[in-house]
Image 1 (tube, one colour):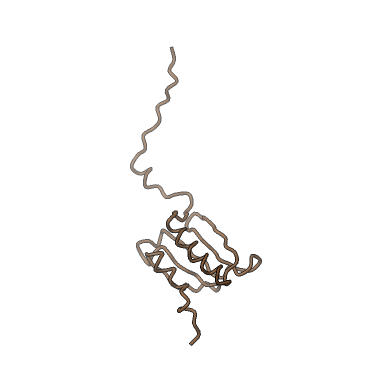
Image 2 (cartoon, helix red, strand yellow):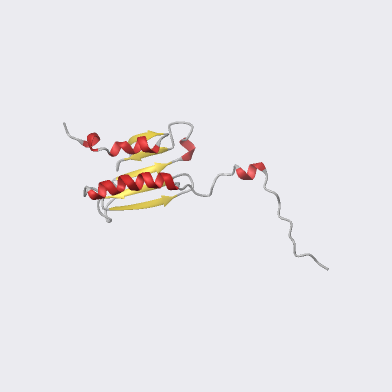
Length: 118
């Protein structure tokens, strides 16, 4: 009598530390981003968004029109977690507007007070 049981290899400790094949936003992070996005849409400033999940970063890009270049991109780069912070907001020319370890603090760059002309 033959057995149908197949012995699976036990995962080693190095298998648990392997980097994911792509970076993505967690549910809480996406909730914070979509909250800001919703406020900006209701103000009529943003109209569309796109998300990219790459090997080294996750990107949430916002647009004024779907046919234009991104106004801003909100990025999560885990490789910078222990350095400058894994979250950043980047303007169209590549200028980093805000970077940090706390996504909520980084997203405060979109407060109306930051964009007032004085």
